[in-house]
Image 1 (cartoon, one colour):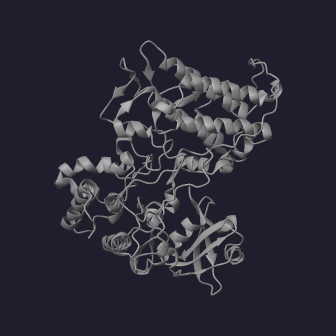
Image 2 (cartoon, one colour; image 1 turned 180 degrees about the vertical axis):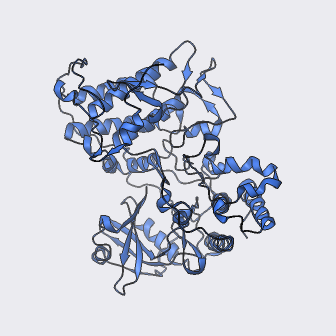
Image 3 (spheres, helix red, strand yellow; image 1 turned 90 degrees about the vertical axis):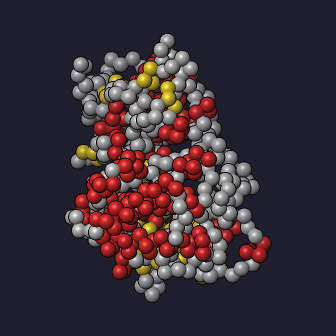
Length: 553
């Protein structure tokens, strides 16, 4: 077996030292990406094509010259004559698995291309594909939709001039094409390699800069460098797809609704800046694909949470959202205190929960790997949380005067208050006043349909496959949340063995052996729970919520 002395690409990208990350120049990253693309292109073009099936940084080993070697062919497959391979056992790594393969069970070379696209994004951002409840590709695609916002994700080390930024833009666009949901629209690996080689030429690095010594490799003095060409300067190309000015809204506005008064008062932008210390990093609680969340303090010293949306919504769309949420008055729905729509700012101000979210309690802050969970919840506390959150969800989409569908319910959107009362955040992702039909797609819909990503494990199967959502889709999501509450396990956990990473897949076969139902229980319960009641709840969750999508109530 060949000796590999520099570990794997994952180590190089994410390992920290006392001085921060190991130096990793853009030219070296490009060279590794090109060599990988060339190897995969060769594998896919063989007389009997070989599909790797699990391309990720941890499976890319680096030799003494940082030349990549693909490893772990444990799930590699020889493709059939039509270039496909069907399987009932979906195997892969969270964050890298082709969503089309996960739905159909059909492997093609384009599945490797999707995974390679994830690796490209990881290489230009130096962010992990899956980190707690944060998924790189979800954030990347949302940033693409906002144009140059994607540049905010680039690794600062390699953003050292207009030329580098232009090359990074081109790599990001190539990665985006590799990630397109419809695999027929993804490029072939030979084209990927060609475009990456063009990026390296555009970089036009002098020989001495191309051989920068890092702390993990010796100077590559004898490495051949492709001769550079004189290229005329080109105008900067914005990453992403230009959106039409008059986009279709997900909020069909009834003229009579526009005339209805707001149930909450507006807050000025100046006041919003004061209560969040000008949206400072120290006030930042969480960053998501649609918004940033800040801790604030109102004039009466009352703490609040400010959800600052990225500026990609129309005014009337946002106002309808405010009208909808402001009318959600219920003991188990988080109260909206005020809103701001001024200049480019779109923000909602909510009541504050000192206990944090259910995610924080069950899995630690933001659910990150290695985070310490909160104090163990007793059986009575868990039952109370389940009941109160169910009542909040039921009110939102069955009894509220303006029906709203959340699409996906997660522990991060359930906040805990005194006496173990759970409240659901009224604004969870996108809203729809007409549940039961498909989302009105924007120009990026067919490339990156918003329902394709089930990276976090909460999306109902029919929603993922068709894009149609309803209250039954929400019930599936809530069933997964209840399963987390009862078992203490994450919906998706990349630290578990592959066959145990998806909570629903892990739990489903165990339904066949009711006598072993106690194996579902969270070990932190210490066995202190009524076993018969626990078994009944588990069966209800698995059968009604997850299998039958029964209506809440």
